[in-house]
Image 1 (cartoon, helix red, strand yellow):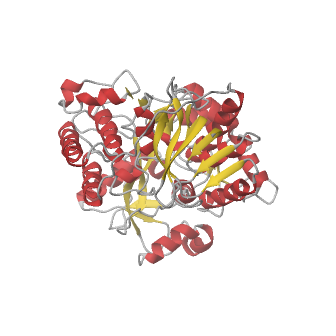
Image 2 (tube, rainbow, N blue to C red):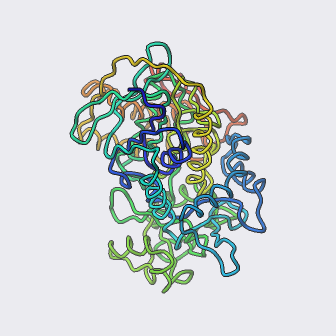
Length: 507
């Protein structure tokens, strides 16, 4: 049987694409049980959209471009911003509980690098969980969607003629199934799980990026990882998050003596772009002075009601955020790079589409604007669904495919530690070369596991980009190049991975 549409991943991008694909039949593979294993449910701030009277799509697009450090595709930014308000309204009409004001307007938060308050929120830090629950209820009620709970994609099925013919999937009992499809959509999230300190599910290790590359897709800007500056530093894996909305509401960053340090770093202080704040927090912790979020005056007694998720996380670690300083550290949070697509989600590989965090339209550039991530899943998920419905039918005939080797846990933990150390907030050529050598050694022992290939894309992209820009900061190349160029890598390009930085050349 050939399915019309097969969607891999059940975060905001996968679920919204599935809903908007109606009435076309959709098979949805969830990986983890529906509602688990998705970064969407952990998103705290909300959805950025031009909903306020002092806002516009043009201003939102302008802020997106400014935050992206010279690499944002301006057309993509305008597409994202122009559709934002309608997508939020559609979610609200579906039942998502965005806060409203007494006069019927939208209750909006301001976050870093936004010119105005623009982030539609739910009870302070509950937006991701609320949106995910709303989407799950809608998907379960949709007659056109066949949910395969706990089915994990292992590999894509190559088509005998050209492109993608579906997915090799493993069911919850461990059996493998060949699921042929005219159109396959990858929406499996980030590479954050490759880092030892991350705010994303540790299982998100760039699998979609690797599967797409194996069929010839281009991987764009894999080196650009956003580090959230205020992960709560209590030794958890994944690390709980102290939402940026806290700083938008007046919380400040201080050292262990209570002295603010951000005003000396950037004119916007705590509301500077995330890459700036992350580097400052990282430097504070390295110096021994420490980095802490002080919300005692700005939030205080209102914490349990206004930011319940952050309050619960802090209290579980023995910190009362109403009165105590919250220890914070940067953590891998969002991947700006991924599978290169056009503005409709097409990868350029026939029958293969991508959306959400595993895709890269260029809309986030080198540094994503806060709370544009959920909007990305909505806008480009909707556009992909429309494009797939309008695409001509494909006759597919799948070739054989095999499940890739798995990386043993001890090897995975070694890899995660090395990536955090060598491809983290601060990088240099020597460290990145060491990381590639470790990847070589692990691959010689364990074979081409997807985590190793994804890590290689990250390391090679970072090694070749001999400048500092956005989320990519190198001590040996601290200046930003005059010419802003995206990185584009195919699987074959990784063969030069063992070259020294200067031999590899600039991106």
